[in-house]
Image (cartoon, rainbow, N blue to C red; front, side, top):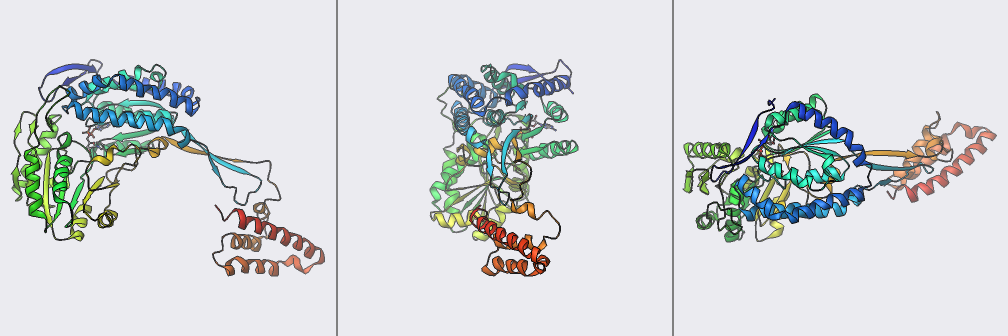
Length: 542
Ligand code: NAD
């Protein structure tokens, strides 16, 4: 674990200039945060949801006041343009707006039908886990950090946050934004630092862990979490496929496919990472992609009116991955039609063809400005290749026939299908977002993002068992046929299933043999019939 004196430097990737630093948290800091957040959390959870929402909403106002400050820091820290940073702020503000407006309803008590317990009532409340640990990435350092923090808070949790060391300046800014709402600050603790701080956070055993990061980190954290049975939610890598079907609008597919591949320098989990194009439109598509890519200007500026579409990669490791994938592809027979050169931290938007699934660039997440394009014979082959991946975040399908596109989309093993566009589904604040396979085990955005930070606590409430409840009768031994009759009457799917057990019950009850027993059974049968009518009316409805 880091000694007290270790610092993380803030480096502008475009210029290489250092613009600040932050002290790394120590193991002792992490453990203290864990204790203090556990002690603080009950007071926050005790506030009604509406009150929590009112206080969280103040963060929305703080962000709107600080827009230019935020985009300036993200621009320096990450290298993305001020406009792209503003996209992030917009998405985050939009989520805070929706989540604070709807949390009271999303977190409301859920009433549960009584079933055959006519004299009991049931409901489930949403309870916070307690202290949630949130570990995040650098690529969307605002929008992948604040919405889960806000959601965990709305749900009544206290939060320990470990921002990425790669976007540490933005992590410090986030801490400052939270501190500008004094009512929230006591319930959120930032722990700055690298993977070692992340490890210490996991070791501190939060009540719930939420990680957004790479598959590799997800696997390491999962192993650690399971040792303590810490509930663990993860949003991990993507290898999103784009399918251009034979009836696609090729010009649009090329234009927005290029944008989806190179937007934020390809450093988005939902970037277009591989493209499968029907052979009938392949040549036209590749030509259009080259034309669009040529227009995709590259550069860095700290002005709000940056003319460039794409900036630098954010740190050296990303350049290494891109270059390794390109070299591997070329060694195995791929041809680079455009781009491929690195200058400083800038890599040109790169278009490749003659690629196949033996190549890293088609199988592993590249997370850089590459667009490998593969020709396919038909939809079946496109679907089979798109699904041939360990990841399943999003997929893009292009066709003029929306029904055709939807048919193909339904066969893709991913969390989100975006038809005739790329990347943009991520910005829809309430459209469930997440992946299948190694890409993730949870859904963010909208209701699910808030409710995932709760567990349900259920209540069953009544006076002592009432003998008029039909399900109380069948606790006594000897009531096999009665229960069978009740089940048939209530859940039978045919008239015979509903009525036959009633006949069996009336005919086989040994009490029918004795006069007193007959009276008793008669009364029992009568109430059973009454109950049956009520059951049919009430229980089957639910
Ligand atoms: P990363 O896995 O390297 O790091 C993510 C976070 O985990 C960082 O804060 C890091 O310090 C921490 N960490 C790293 N090793 C750790 C360990 N052993 N124990 C505890 N914490 C550890 O990922 P990254 O490079 O920051 O982010 C890029 C990755 O995130 C890509 O794979 C991308 O696809 C993925 N991502 C996924 C989504 C999504 O919603 N599915 C969104 C954005 C990014």
